[in-house]
Length: 449
Image (cartoon, rainbow, N blue to C red; front, top):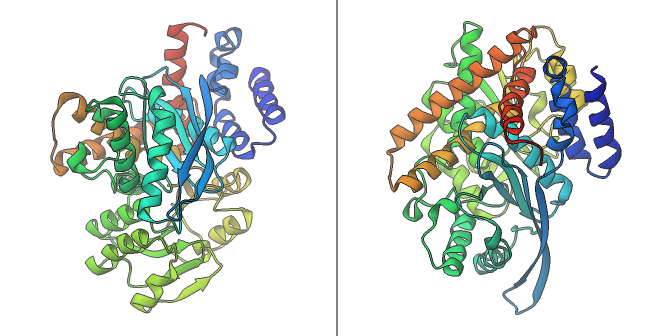
């Protein structure tokens, strides 16, 4: 491997050994870039890769909030403004108890290349807090969101940094965050946050956009293989917005999702999550705050497998769509043993590096990376920014049309980038290279800082 590339990766491993998720994603992206780095020796002279793995800025702040009993609590918040070479920093806010700087940095680093792939003028960033919304009342969540924004509002803006939602932060939380931002600024800068409700300037189909986009990407892969999506069975994880969107779009196109999962296990629905009642129940499950997929099994009389993950089921397509590092080597071996042809990552880095490498080596298996597959969410966020800046409201059909076109373009860019560097039909390497090239070009144009 290129000596400069190796030195940067080894330095990251040594310096950030305490942040394994960040190390993992840097290694996954950069190991695909060797042919590009070989072709551009000028990158080493300006230490382009060394600069790319260090956030432009990252800050920590205290978040103090009061519970319903009058007791005060203190959590930690973070915002990583990782790379703004292409535009204002753009990336979600995650509220989960396990959030720490390594999670924020890994998500922010992935966001750089995901946003680049959309072709839209947005940089990469991420944020969050070690706050667990589970079990909190509506009023407690509102007070936490308000306290979080009181610490953050000075550092964001439509042309600076535009946060969105992520795990633990949905439309409700974005609404509270935007309301507090508006109160503090005394201005209707609705372009400062995306994922807002429609009444507050949000875009049509934003909640389901990541899932819709993932299915559009899958359609491209199937078309390459001379197949159609109609009749396909899909194994998903989670039951949040992303999986809900996949279920809706898959049904519309004649496919069916047969698994859902949660912290308690997974369900298998042989008939598919295809009826209006079943799909609507996912929204009800998410809103309940119980975080139990068993509720679906109890409601619809399907098998529930406690404490297990769905990666041993037989399905045409695997779409891990819950969280990072959800698929380890043991699960990867079960997927391969079932002769699954299509492994389409949807969640951010859902596969460990060793498992991803193993799956990519399986004869006949096609692997697509999350940074390309799940880019539909941030693409639609950028479309929301465009609508906000122009004071326009697009129809759901118009947003969906543009989303579909963006996902088709992302797929084609990945295919072409891999072929340009003699890597064949390698969607993982192609996405990494295509995303990297655009950021690298902008950074070279703007000088060293």
